[in-house]
Image 1 (cartoon, one colour):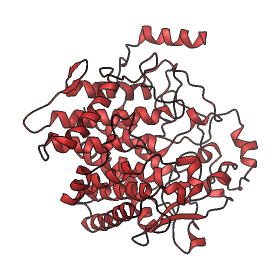
Image 2 (tube, helix red, strand yellow):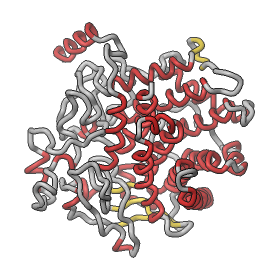
Image 3 (cartoon, one colour):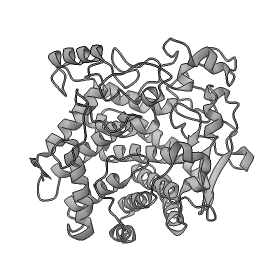
Image 4 (cartoon, helix red, strand yellow):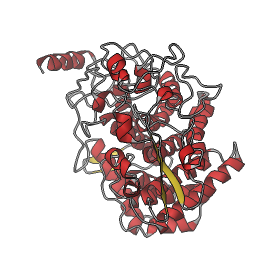
Length: 488
């Protein structure tokens, strides 16, 4: 602990809290963030594949169920395709693209961002073969986690699990509806036919979810250990909010107006809590003058604004920070929430700055806050992630002079199948690769690891999943924030 304190004190002397002397190369970080999704791809890889150490994998997914379920994304450092967090990832990639369209285009990353979204939505189209049927998982979490293999070598079972009218999953259906609806907005101009196809799926999935209420993990018990859903109301509201964004139909606005709860003051936007996202989308409508500020609409906005005030240390229940200023949410994958909070601060800063009738300020318990202050704090969190921290470590893999080398990721930690095609067995992977005290042979560019502890300390150890594992939903919100930062 004493050495940790010395490192922190030295950092505080040479680096002003929250900002370094030189800004990171946000454009490079943006490019790497999108490349990351190519490393997470499952299925037959395209000729344009940039993460060259990866190859085709899981080409028989769905075959046992008589359906083609190839494609999609692996969720984190394992080889399971969990539909619930995958859909959240795609929704956040789509929101990043919609909100920062011009900035992505300016940096010639718009096409890459759209490709990352489409890789997910193409899979969701396959996974939704009937209006009231949605496949929500391929692979078994338990059997997958006892093996350490490249996705190209998998010998573990690959059963497909679904929800349907007899085995509901309102949360999974609502989140996937949100992903399809948000993506339909992304493709409205570039590919109207594909956009319409996505919107059709989104509408069906929303109706499926609201008409057959239930938790998806009760229908897919294997998912409960890994991605248990605490509520499904937020997912249905999330789906309705994005369907209104895509269509402008009053029926979806009406659904939002009759919500039993606007969620109250939450902690963060995450794969298991969409309330802050719904609150932000409703608040945008308020600030644009499209709905009135009375009743339930005002509740949505006030709940979100109190959360943002708490992030800024100007609220009634301020979020704790580490000694070096990083927001602290939880010991497991803390950067997931740091990234999503930075995204909310960034988009809301834009919503306030472009409000109908002129810029608005955020009203906090500690006083009025200008829109720029929200964005400045978000930037400080991103800078921390990119290396302005006591460890002088970038928590984006492949970015900067120092970054985690022993990422908890099966494919990255084992020599590429292109260099050595010899299959790696289930337990052999642990012996030969997981336990190696050496950096991974493959750099998984753009991955955001779980991050340091509450004292800003990071131990680059592969067996520490809470800190060293990277997840698809960690990077997605960062795409939008980096696009804005890179354009400044």
